[in-house]
Length: 99
Image (cartoon, one colour):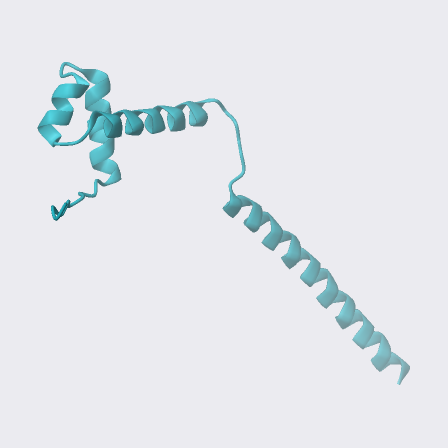
């Protein structure tokens, strides 16, 4: 087992091109995999991910990502900070008026 296996990294563009080629034909998945020296299970996994992402995007669901939730929280906190800053300024002016 001294054989060193080198794994290749495929970019999003390469994956997309292979998935689209497998969906379009005329080559079969087996032929594409042999040409690219990848396993059929890998290409099938990419196809499933590609189709699932497309279906989710087209379904109209607007599921919020973590980043969207964080942006909303930051916005709420900024508004709260603005209100508190205004309250402190008003309180300061009132105190100066009493002096």
